[in-house]
Image (cartoon, rainbow, N blue to C red; front, side):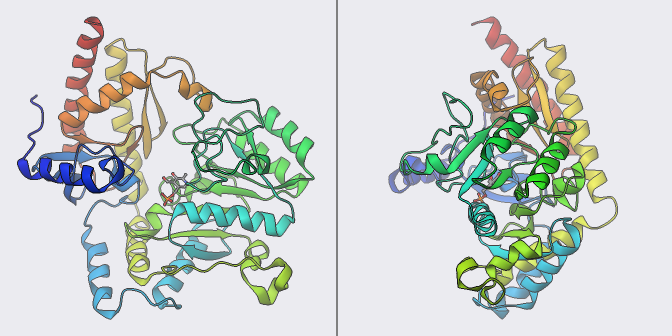
Length: 433
Ligand SMILES: Cc1ncc(COP(=O)(O)O)c(C=O)c1O
């Protein structure tokens, strides 16, 4: 297979981006590709190269790009106004749909991004418990706030529960407000909770951390301990919400938190996210219920934006239909199985981890249970594999295959061909090392 074509048009855009954007990017994917359009489970770059798309806008496009029903809903709303900073019926209907779907959701507050949703969810826990500290898990991603960027991806992990800031510009004092625990290690988590229970405002966790599923019983045990101590449990479902099941990871794994955050899928490809949860905790957004002391100030220009709300509602309507999740899971299972088999046959020390709607390879043969386990994976080999796949028409992020309802049997076939060819080349490259 030949390398993709690079047109002067795309190269010119890449050069312009380098001039006006730091690092030549929006901060997400590397600067070496400019996407022109998407349709279903495919995208095209500005040179006209076609890709099977497993990036899916980093997750939101679960029903595929340009789904006719989502497009029609958005087109119908556009001439009626695109933002109001006031209640509108579509936002209300979306909140109703979330309350009907998500087990912990008694009420919903809309924001614009997952980062904001996580930031406010932590603040709700602090307001509710009248304590300051939040416990998060090493390697857990909760957006880009100062609090969340504590031990997301530490190069040199510290001693638990001490967090390591992931970014420049984070006040030193934030370290004192966050405790960090190992994912899937209930003994350590339990002893940290016992030790710090009087200072803890809440615990935030990705129920499926990046690519790592919870060990059997881990979330259940975490739920039990937090309930015993009256410590709010927040599930970050920005990725898993409406992806793992219509009710999210809480439905899929059968554990109901006190609060959750949602994003990505609920905005149907537009900027919209939410905090959802128990009415007595959500009450902190309502001054008439909690008074000045308990009131949590929260305002956002685009909150409940009607265009995003109609796109989200149309997306949820598609996902609600019988067979939608069966199809997503069947596609994911077939892809995961095929990739595992090919890597095994090639004799590479690798495993495919995750769940059918979201998975990737880790180049390590050791079991991956937590963030430190992922560090044992060969990141360079993964980057090479991703690069070879990009040249063979597969679009993905650094470490995730997002599966879509729109992926077809032909997408699966093409992907398997690309995997086979890229793995051959990877094996030859390793021989030549
Ligand atoms: C689990 C999780 N939480 C929060 C976020 C932040 O969401 P956003 O990028 O909308 O701020 C992400 C983004 O990928 C995420 O994966």
